[in-house]
Amino acid sequence: MTTRIPAAEIDGLFGAIVKTMSKRMFGKVPESMGVMWHNQPVLKASMGFGQKLTKWDRCDPGLKAFAHMAVASYIGCSWCLDFNYFMARHEGLDLEKAQQVPRWRESDVFTPLERDVLEYAEAMSATPVAVTDELSARLLEALGAAALVELTSVIGFANLTTRGNVAMGIESEGFADACGMKPLAARPDAAQRAGVASPA
Image (cartoon, rainbow, N blue to C red):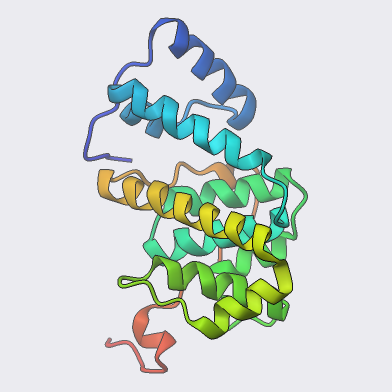
């Protein structure tokens, strides 16, 4: 991986803690950690919010995981998509569904609620935001207000991390490959989604 900002050496006491935690969780220290190391307050804030986010419990964890993966696929963040697939395996989520998130519109494995969540994640990630009253009303009825607020915040955080990774050139580091899992389904390009044949 060649990032647009070269990775810094992770050093000091905090660096030792980060390395230990990373190796325990992922089996290695992600190269992306070295990129963020240039500004440790930013790294700490992002890590802190990410940890708090995992403790929220008003929305189903599987729905939130699929939503984050949908954002990653939509924005084109291969790091987040790969990492979230890796985490889906460790958290006992449905791996067939996780694998199909990039092509959820063409797949038949998702429930109507899951499809609404995936659509919501993409609609929130569009510019301008494309959430409709109808979609929001369906999710409000199915999930309740507290869960929808939580889901919305998770998707917002996913946009922060995915867009930052893409901008800095942070790409997949092979988390899913290291576990011997099949590659993720590819996201159809815009022409395929519109039913138009891609040019040769």
